[in-house]
Image 1: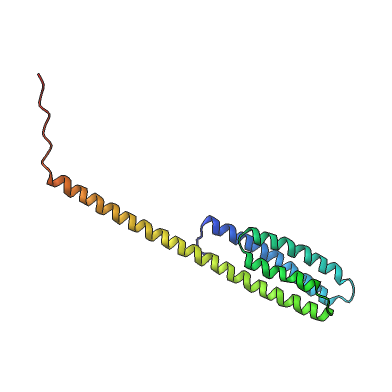
Image 2: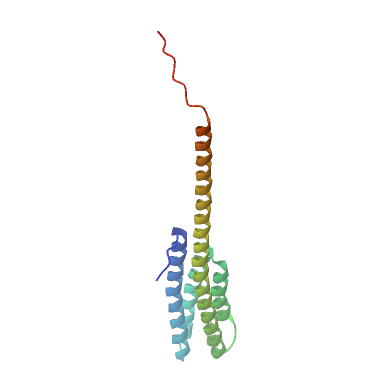
Amino acid sequence: MTPRVSGAAQEKLGVLDEVRRKWDRVHRLVEESANQEYGRAVFWSQIGRIVKELSLLLSNSGMGSVAEKVEAMTLVLRRPTTVRSKVRGMREVVGRVRESLEIEEKAIVTEDQRAAERRQRRMHELNQRLRSFDDTREDDSASQDPPRPDPEVP
């Protein structure tokens, strides 16, 4: 069951869902390029374009730490090394980013729940203060003399 979250948290979770869908595409492209003997450059250029888009999306959503891990894929793609080690590096980045996305999602939900608890606690404190203020006003009004009627003017 999904916990209730605020609008801002829902927006961030929506961004994470979109990133997760696109990151699954990156993973498929990495695996397809690993199985190809020729034409890997086409897959790698597609991966590069998706990675740039995801990095920008994450950075604009305030998730820079995840964006940096996504950008690590471009470093792996540009590394002059064997195909085998490049694919291994891309697989490692895919795993790290997936883990970061899960951690970020948990952090968003947890922080939102904490903020809701703080708001609820603060409202409870304010209500208690208001009740105590009302009680003191009632005590003050009861201790005063009853109001005098206005004298009739002829």
